[in-house]
Length: 231
Image (cartoon, rainbow, N blue to C red; front, side, top):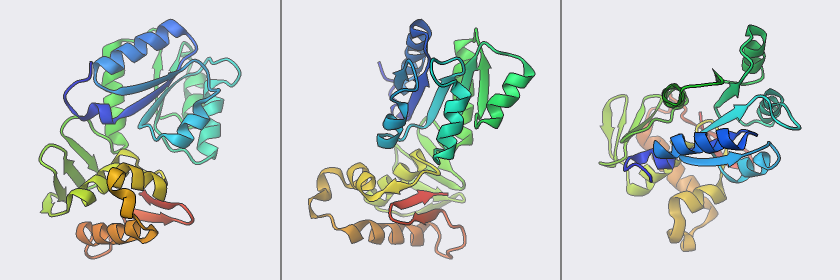
């Protein structure tokens, strides 16, 4: 059962080869209201990441085939910047250092407390620009999801419903290149029948002028041949 807040907009990937631990993690996170996708190995994860943009990955170190930190290192080399929390039975300092060096953002040793896990996940999501509850924040941008209000550096800024949805999509996927097809489906959806290639450019330019009229903050970067990313 999902909570009535906005956590179900936040997708978490878990890679854990012990089925009972995977099931337990899925249970606790879904109970908190998160959307969860579990994998018993790294086998299909890369393909999943090509199609989806999860907010966080929880990765066991001791996986069949590719060791967890090696897999994360490979994902980082491919350009994926999704925050990663490692789960491991290894608690030596050298293991911890190796995990962080391979691209991990946080670490939990087994056995772990589900309450501590949830608190650490929330902290990691906050640090990466994704928050839970009624508001989402990135840099000095704050979206109130219930009232559909935007504040920039605490000042209210008027934007259209479509611009709000566009900005929310970027904040849910920070630092990741979002292509035009993804933006069209996420933001315009069923209204994309009369959609043209220039529609996104026009919408992005209007949004940028509203949230950064001086053009000094550089919230967005164009990604050649793809689309844009929130930086």
